Image (cartoon, rainbow, N blue to C red; front, top):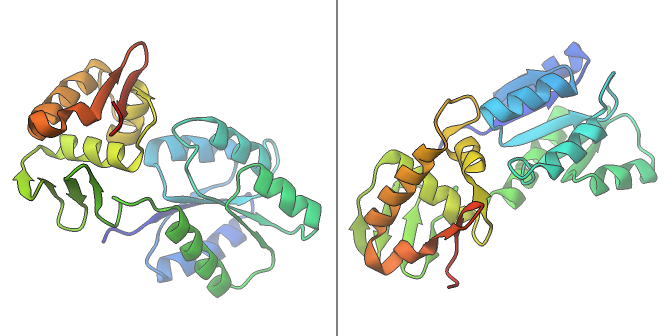
Length: 229
């Protein structure tokens, strides 16, 4: 299984280094940022699996960045653990209301941090990323990287597979072409928006008559994956 990527956002280099060492020893891939601005750029380009976010930073605070990430559709599902020296109850509530998934107060032990991080990732990892997901007889198995329809193998290219995996783990929600580009191709790859249409067409063709209706066109917006008509 590929290593999960964790972004550490803290303006104090020694704290970032201490956390990075603990996470790397636990087999996580680590990115580091010393401000909310540089963190946001890294999130767009590298799409980490989780953000460890310091509450108090010069300039834009961690809480403001958390609110921004939860407002933007492409990062709304990104798990966040707030790091702070503030242990007061109202600060915890404020952090959780801003969209944080957990809260850890400094000083903390690296073992506690890794345990909390694993727990949040377990809670927030949707089916189809590590476990198989099935809709109307269409089965996507991320472990074997195979797709089958009613027990028969479905052949498709790697981009169509990634598109289908994203759709099957984010059902019933309309996405614009640019959001799909960010999520499936990555924010740092330059691809024309119309390329999405080409791959959607290929994906529908691969799914065949029985399942192509699951990938729906949403007029004026983009596309949605839905088992509903």
